[in-house]
Length: 173
Picture 1 (tube, rainbow, N blue to C red):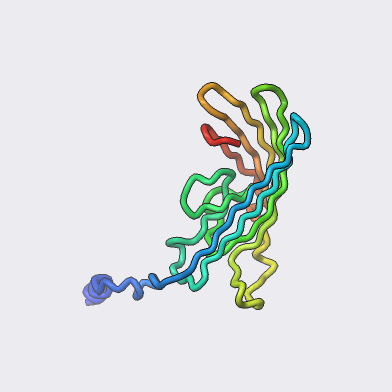
Picture 2 (cartoon, helix red, strand yellow):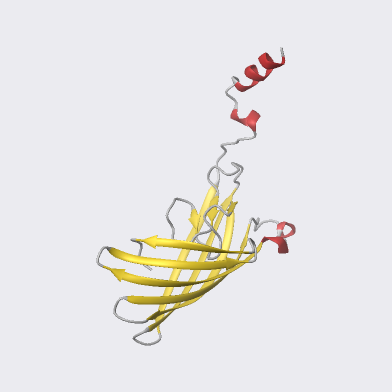
């Protein structure tokens, strides 16, 4: 009898019974990248990423995937030192400063630091918590090969307290 009750509840086709809601929400997302050539070999990089979903109640279904070095999936917000899907949240604000140096015609290196805050509600000041601050940093070595750019990056964030590695083939850095 208990088995029948469970099957009947799952067959109700009401996703709300499972805690999933598909109400309307408004999404605001911006990614600003600014590059300043300091010399022929060195470029300074500034990045600001901000996103928030107002009225969002869908759990993880369309939330932002925070982590990774390059955007490779929809709703991803890159954060150095975190692997993809390290944090899933309906809101994120982050700022990054970095430098890229050309070592030779084909080799480049870069260093970047990033800080951010996630899972906030701008309409409720009480929702802000120091637990939601993020910090990360990383260093990369890139090679411009004939088949496309190749890059290896090592990053660290106190959020995970571990060094993570990334291998990139084909995306510009």
